[in-house]
Image (tube, rainbow, N blue to C red; front, side):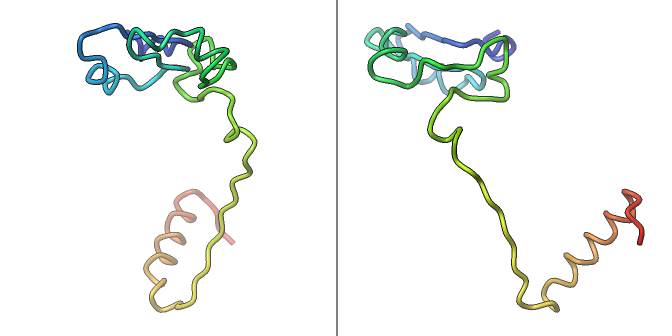
Length: 101
């Protein structure tokens, strides 16, 4: 049910909380055990007070330093012979998508 709702806060109070926690995929912040009160996550120990709401935890995490990082990707091909199969595959995919010219 939790993963369907993708709720903002999840508290786990079970005998073996980590086993259950490992099964969860979608939540804003997870609080495991009696010592991990939600208020500490918001105002004391982290993780954060700005969390995804309305089910958006299926796709996004809480606001963090990672929110402000700029991810850059690049590639380099030094040996065209070794890249021939990749080039052929990319060309075929482009043609399938209608990218002629």
